Length: 256
Image: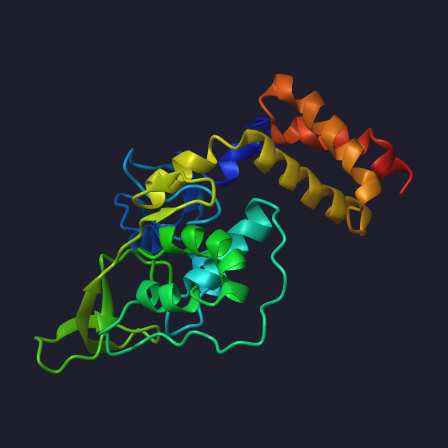
């Protein structure tokens, strides 16, 4: 992205990613052989591309046993969009139903009934729901796994590589609605909505670069400089290299 001065929107959606054979198998992408990582052009309908759908991010935003739209949504809102979420109020956390009778979406609907929770969850939950088609290891799924001895067992493979049996639960619903009323039906739709947020994505990336470059948080007095950098990068389609050049030439970098 830096070398080619690609737009900041590539953070959320790109038509390529970097894979080796094992990771390509995990992503369901064929014809990638060997252990070396290389750039791979993704199929047109692939949900991959960008940081949000990298298996590494999807894994660290799950707890190892179940996925959490709250954790994943908070990661997207804070790290990708640059919207701060305050600490949660002292209420009971949502524990997923491993027997598969109730989805995490249904549980969160009850959780949001608490007015002290609703304001933050209206921002965090929709992005998290968009990623629900990805399991705890970042693999694709259409249905949840559950414990249901009345159904035929399916043969799967665990994180330790050993075979094990599981049962299918309820279908995954990855639809949602953003706080501004725009709706999406899955991760592909959600990415298309975020791709329209050039300024927001460029602003947050510039803030993150400034924090990395100066070792200090971006304060209120720095906001005008951040906006000047973004304005200067507009003619470059908010390219990442243009944002970096603007930052290193600013007083924010040279004097802070």
